[in-house]
Image (cartoon, rainbow, N blue to C red; front, side, top):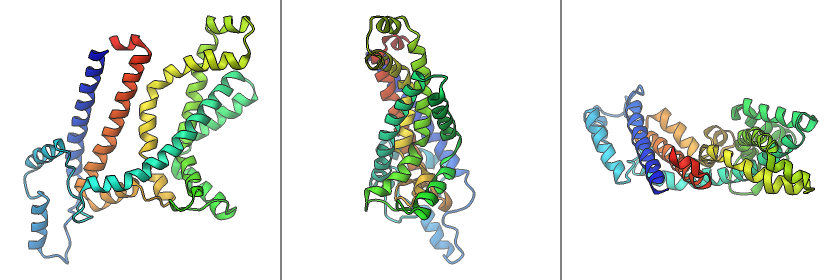
Length: 305
């Protein structure tokens, strides 16, 4: 098990290193200059570039940035003068994470429940209805679903606030639903497939033949063994939902990391672009690492791969 864990840790570290390298050089390919302004004297612009180290050759900038990154320094934002990228992440990530936790909690429960119902009523009307919902949940992007339910429940019916965050718990309902919709749909399809594969196993047929109640069969045999294959998708799912959605945060005016990433790209805030991208990527890698370790612990056959 130790060898398996160490191998996964090394792969995770290499992945973060490649991500940081690619992100750095791609950000340098963005057209424009963050300090280009006709109202600012050229001498001042040059001093600004020198302050952020942008007057040095790109390869030298790269080694300086990677050295700072190893010390946990993500740089200083260009747009938010005097504020480090770490401070910005520390202030706004909790909002995205809280929204993600709410969305993930109900999405996991509803998705697993829908998947179980689809398997138990396979090829009958509940199965067809829920699978249509799952297909629509995957096919319709947040940029379509968000404005629709915002207009319907927020503007027309006035049941829920149209935006904002932190004042009332109702403000979290619509963005959490939109953010978790894809997870619900994905879990429904995955759980249905896993349950159908388990239902045909001999131990399930034996349990039913012995007269065990359908509920006990589902909870003790079918559900427990169906959850193991779903662990493989758990890492990206958790990371994607907990980090929030740039689109959802923009639609519902939520002060999370999403708006800062969008603004960083539009204003060519290189340190913030790289910092947020590396932070998100590292978070995803860590979630995958934890799931890999959990998967290897649950299924010892995985450790030999």
